Image: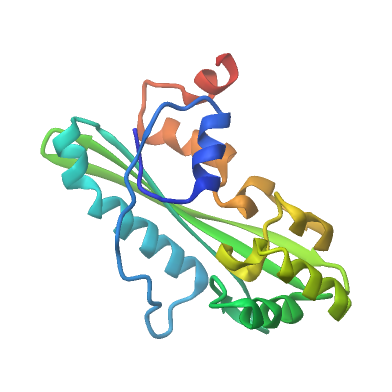
Length: 202
């Protein structure tokens, strides 16, 4: 299997579940299209990353590609990508403070069957609610450096956990990959191979 993503969080999640895979990051234009909803955006980007990896898979002889993209968003604040710098990170976190926002991941699975390609793409959304946070808390978190390469300017698996009041949905999805659903979707695409049993059996 090829993971078409450079995200260390996605790599760690797949390794934790016992998957064997090669990382090959796809270089694509991630600009949103006019009128595109967050779910549509992440599905399109995941699909584009997966298809951009097909030539590499043909060269290596791999027949399965998994690609993903994640955005943080809400109707009130729009889509939040990775902050450009510390002031931008502080701006994003201030917008999220005391509010519920959504984390949506798009995942695309490609199965290469000879010259043909079977594609299956889906998205998963988790609701995340932040505590009402003081400016001092937010500045301290930004000063840690952790928010600077994270969508929405926080890492729920790191120090950013203290910002979160509660979530509704898949925790791993907030980290960057809805692992439980991915395994089940792999079963659909790769009929005859039960990835759930692989994960549970180690």
